[in-house]
Length: 218
Image 1 (cartoon, rainbow, N blue to C red):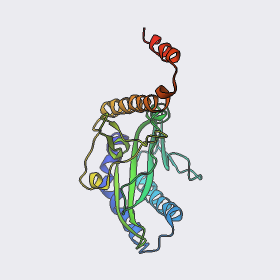
Image 2: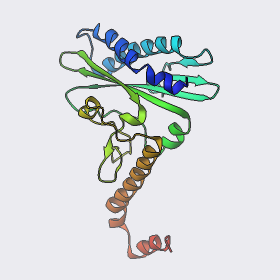
Image 3: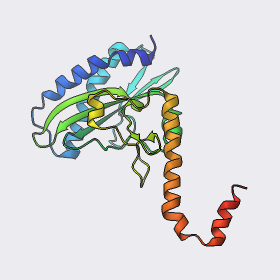
């Protein structure tokens, strides 16, 4: 069985065991930054234990010491690398965590990892309790920007954004294959450039400068 099939097949066990450990916190989550670190550390240990027992001995699993280093769990194999990232978001608003950047996603992520997964943790910031965990492929966690049929991103910096809580709950997937995802990525890159040019560049160009841009397409 391939690494991808094995990890996909472990989805129920990962969710069950991560949830069991996080439920033990019982309202002991701290403020957002500490809560995120708590959820990440506990979940990573559970997943690494599961994968160590189920993946071939040729796999090497590691977790970074720095909070900002991607991924939270790296799986190195003779064939290439795989990644699992862990994200936490409060339940009172739709998830809006950073997932990648559209301008570097293909080079820094798609070209570097054979496959990627996301563990998304939903918690209540008022009761400080864990609510639910979702485990899915990275692309399956990404939302959609409907006006360009592209992947969801924040306009001013191009950071990729997840789908809504309703989408997670209903298992709504916008990108079923890598090919669909790459098309959505290209659509969003072009859409963002067009929007930025139209909003920030064109109004400030002289007629001569506008002609220079037109000449680029001749």
